[in-house]
Every structure is written in structure tokens, then in C-alpha cells.
Image (cartoon, rainbow, N blue to C red; front, side, top):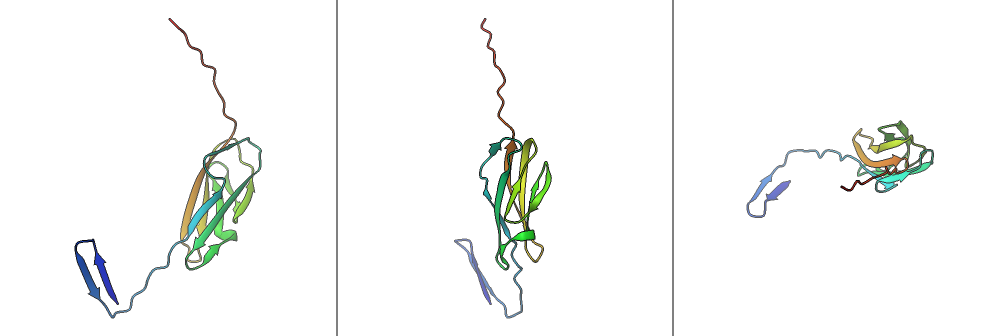
Length: 125
């Protein structure tokens, strides 16, 4: 095995005939929907959709994908879950776990509630 490294100016190389291993790669987690900072009325069911992928395992599904809200706790497992969130701001996390126990997380922020506008009064002097 020969390794060649360069920084664009300097170059170095090394050769080895010794055995070596390459560590297994961790998974990736992706939240597909909803996207952006979504606001919706409390009590409205909402589909969370996500995907997990690992170079060694391929597509991750079922219990390998867990959904969690920082406000409501565990929301379920799998690529899609239907949730009804409590009033307030939620950071939703999708955690993907591969067969080696490596973990990756994706997050999105959701708001359950309506926008409220406070009255504004201006006083001229």
C-alpha cells in the first residue's frame, strides 16, 4: 500500500506492506418533511418523514430511525410517523443508528401555535 499526501505545494509518500483496517462509517440522517421552520395549529396531526442511510448497511428503516421532541419526548420509530404535538416550540430530532451502534441525528424546529400580535400604540408629543 502506498499513501501519497499533498497540500498543493509539498508532497510526501509512504509505503507499507503491513496489515491495516479501515473503520466502518457512521450513518446519515435526513428529515424530508416538514421542511423549514413550520408553524401549525395545536392538535393538528402532522406527518414527520425522514430517511437514514449507512454505507455498510444501506437504507435504515424501522427501529433504526427514532423520532424525538425536546418538548414531548419520544414520538416513534420509522421513516414516517404521524404526531400531534403539544403547544409551543419543538426541536424534532431524527436519530439513525446503524448495526455497529454508530449514530447520526438531524434536527428541525416546529411551532405548534398561532402567531399573536400585540396592540401597538404610538404617542405623539
